[in-house]
Length: 203
Ligand code: GRF
Image (cartoon, rainbow, N blue to C red; front, side, top):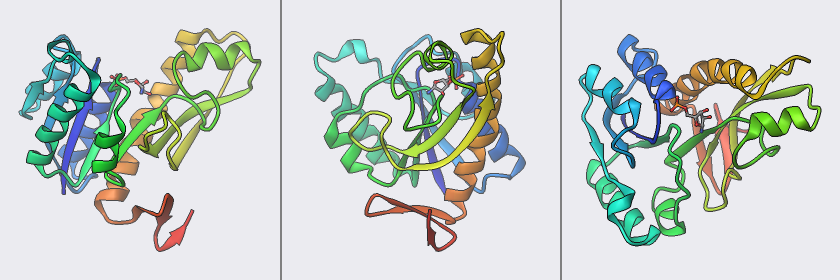
């Protein structure tokens, strides 16, 4: 089971998924890590683990369409079974998303459909929420709107700051994301007609 991971930043979720492939809790291999930023910390994490890591720098492309075409060609050549967005901070064009429909997942730091977009921790605190968390979903053209596969809740404490809340949500991400990848690698989870199926049942 061939996995490609796309990153833009520190790559702590990438690390969690690499660790899970190393121990065998994910039955698959990360074939390639791709970053749109040359300074992404996750590139070094990949190299440390002996996984090929490559930069396709968005600043070398004039348009979003041109970038996504190059990224799509690279991904097609890799023939991944699953593309994992792990802090890949770019909005993807429709053609790219459609090319890999049902084969691309993302982790988002909120209990979707609440708090799509950025600054989710600050927004959840400002709204007086008691519950926050993270969601793993299939990617569709609309941002953070794809069918949810699994979520992990985190209780907001009265004295939480966006940073303290983010720390606890990320700890949950590092368990949830490898878990979902392992389910997909094992054929337990898939997408059919915008519906997530798990163990032979729509969820
Ligand atoms: C995570 O908080 C994830 O929810 C969001 O981007 C962040 C990536 O962090 N999509 P890292 O690069 O995996 O450390």
